[in-house]
Picture (spheres, helix red, strand yellow):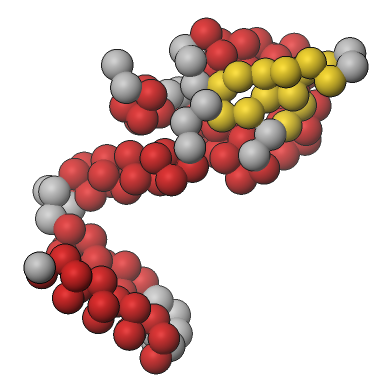
Length: 127
């Protein structure tokens, strides 16, 4: 099973830990525990990190007495996988519906630069 697909099948707490590692790039179990914000023991966090390593989603290196964990999958690949899953699940695989919803979410209008970027991307996609 591809790692990107594995990300879609994680338990909520595992997903939270992966999100922390994607944001930070790397972290110790104590740093992950602190970033979770919920009351969770250090041993539980270490156990989940160990499980994520067994699944092939994180790697670790020793830094003195502790391990520093990093995601194996690149953040771009994870983003693409998550977005693909979101579009498929909530928008019946309609990219245009997802884009329309994103545009409607904005609290402020897009800037001229953002409109120009979107215009260029749409022209590129049409080719």
